[in-house]
Length: 498
Picture (cartoon, rainbow, N blue to C red):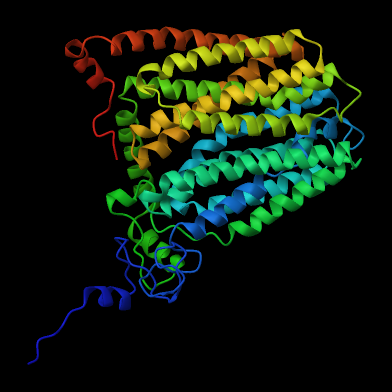
């Protein structure tokens, strides 16, 4: 009998398997979105329309992120709600409308995080797009406090679903592209928000376009994002079940059939139990590092303070300049976002020993943030307030990049997504407590300027903590190596690297 000749590469291609993936792929000929095969037809399993490589999914996700964040009405949302369009009072917006999304996000975040893993990201991204559309439909056509509160509840669902947006791309591309796709996805969000703010400012200041048209443009933009979400490829693995052997096999069956097989083989209760045990184990291992804990503390507390300041700044500006809503809200948002992006890029290229000086840098610049908010609160000049808010965002955005980099450097992908979710949840809890104390406490009835004074004091307290911790870390790290090795070892969790 003649000896059978085996050609591994040909066998893989005919079987629909890719050399670059441990699983199987559909053997469909086409042009490779990963760029590995150039412009020639690809038989190597790299191509499935919008489902292979990193370029296709990244382009779709960036398009979704850009359109979902290009919301021209947001720089003028307070004026839209308190003006002739909705006739709400500033008191109603401050104490009854805006707090809704804070409290709702607190209760929605954890369920959305767990459902995101079970449904494999894409359905939750679609839910986010639907929530955005529903929110701005209600903003456009609803009237009264209750419908506006419902709009912000839908908005809180979309905000809670951000965890799916940021986790999705890691489940669809190879690890060697993580750094590249992360920068693209975050840049798309920033550019979307900046483009929306700039468009709003130009239309209002130069074109005299009414705010109702800005709300309608926002609805069109988020609708395009929703349509784009349907074209995102479905990931083949889950966050917590993949490493335990419960990922869905990629075969010639459809994704729906695969999911049905998985549901029949593993009950929902068992899966949830395994997820919680994995979550508990990952939390224990992730937060065993003192350094990671402190960077997570800043990430959570900083995000809480940022959302409080950014969420209520329009009410602050309205009090300073109540009869001129065309003052330059959109232009300020555009400049602050772009300057924050430039500062973030600059931080990414700085050669500094962040493990030694990172906490001290956080403490020092957080003190500057507190000073900027104090100055903004004490001044009644709208231009000083605009300048201070621009400085506030310019200082805050690169500090979040430092925290993200330092956290991601010591954690693998699965734990990074977990830590991101936990930090967001802690930030939401703190924000809810701060909102309930500062805004919704009937006995206090603080004015908007008094609220910002508390926010400045809040950042000052954070800066004090990190200045003390930063000095301690710098001194301990600069000790002679012989007496410092044991301490450095305790600051890093076991198996922290991917």
